[in-house]
Length: 220
Image 1 (cartoon, rainbow, N blue to C red):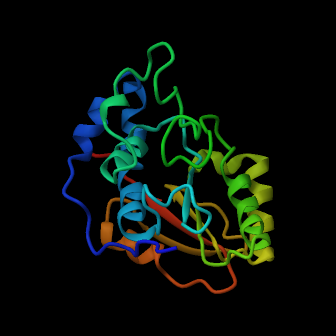
Image 2 (cartoon, rainbow, N blue to C red):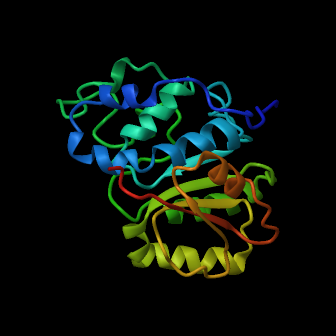
């Protein structure tokens, strides 16, 4: 199956406008904005996946662990054509079309249901042996986590396992975190610098899982 290659540039879409359409979650707007660049660079330049291939086994996949702040995630998925912007409004209403948090059964392109902290990294770690068991060694699994999540025991155990296991199909984007490397390949970058994010996301890491630490300073 043909899978798209990384695009050379970002599409000219107004992601901030699309984020503003996601009403009902304004209290998380600042935290969601901190993930916007760290999501848009992988989706537009790194991940080999399209709306047409997202349900096939071969494409890359990104698991959003920081799912209780999905505004930026939804904006990026809309910009990349996974779904129309119409469902973005009314996130706090009764039975919203996208759910109250990222839900793989409701959000086109979502890989997991998330919302509570700490639940994304263990499934991402487990997905790589699952891919290998199917003979799939090309698809890459990405996970976006927040710094507070990595204090949780389940994430610590998943991190400690992935390094010695040599899960080089696994990649993690961490928003403003200073955790131990634990046998991982690690790049630390400015979380708002698109070229630095792209370089870090595409850095070689033979035999080791890869983490990109995206430091994000509050905008004045």
